Image (cartoon, rainbow, N blue to C red; front, side, top):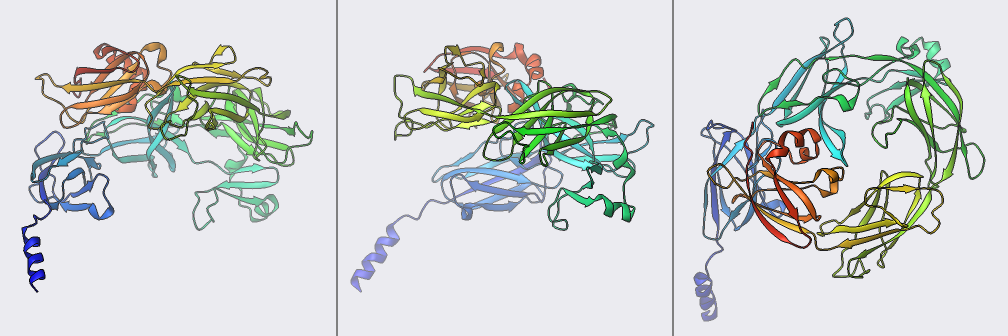
Length: 559
């Protein structure tokens, strides 16, 4: 009994774990207007699911979290008509600013400026200005890789019977808009092929294939299947060339109207031929054939099909200059490619002879002579030949990239989280830093890559015109003009509550540094954005292994 009493006294003297509270309010971005009945989520960094807490803003936009343990938290708010917004997030930058709770100190007056969602609307019209229904209209974001622009689909809408579309719930930023008509039924060999949206009802098929005799008996052929016209994807402001698309600036909560798009159709022809397995000399059984614009290494194929008993037929290819490619669909990597010119007549009897790719050997070493890449104190890297090939080096640094089709490639090394850069790269006697040409004869050639673990580091302070720190701003390190075709040299980071950001892994060389409120981090690889802001950046020479400090003045929103 006496021992129990002593234990209770000791427990009473032991201080309880520190528990804090957090209070704040939710306002509409750019105003003091409260946002009511919004859902607030508080997530502890590195915590478990049970560490997540939720709240709802009241009629004054206020919210409270209690019984919190010390740590770092991320705070999110969401409501219909707004985009999901993190504390410290600005309109074009999706990254927010964490909140730190210190033992014994409550956090008060946290303000989350929730971002109103934007809308893009318009119509799709034919050549006679008649509405076109059931056209997919997509809101696209540009992404850049090695100086080339591609698109990611953010959201889409389908036109109604008036040809109208409305894409809503969009974050602020730059958008491209495209219209793509639904794929029409087609006839191939003795089959009637109808494109469908995959669903449980059709067993997740993308097409329904019916024998020709059955569809003829049922009298169900769509006249469009007999047409030699093809509708092309159209980009705002009415071009069929993705490179000529013009972006639309969408401000927070704005509705951009009148983005009308025409339909554009072209006459098409059939392209037929045969694919031969160059190893066996027999017709290929497992292969695909694609048509790609001449000189294009990636992106969307103009047309594609599977090989059947060595034969292929592409039913609707518009006029233009292309590369016709064949590739095996088995583990044996065989390739073929020939240029073709498509005019107004069908192309017949094209022969594609597939040959094996080549194995590209090499070695990667760490500067100073180290070759052990996967020991406790040495990182492990992966290699890429773009487009389409990769390899993981062995512990001694050697590698072989198998089955590479002959052609021109870019060399990229993926360092993961390890701060590093490529010090030198050679393919045989030639420099491989800016590209590699792979040929069938690699006699005496291999990739020799030397990596340095001493890149540059940059500490940045971002301030406004009154020298006050600015949080939640994306800081971008943009390489000098001759190196801007290399995506791996660009670096970005977001300022914290003290206006500071740390950029690691910088390759040595000259950079322009930018801190802008309304520029998305990835947009700095857009040559058009660089042209506008080039003269507002701070020039800095990054030195190998050096840690440098710089103060940047923020470029305000709308400037």
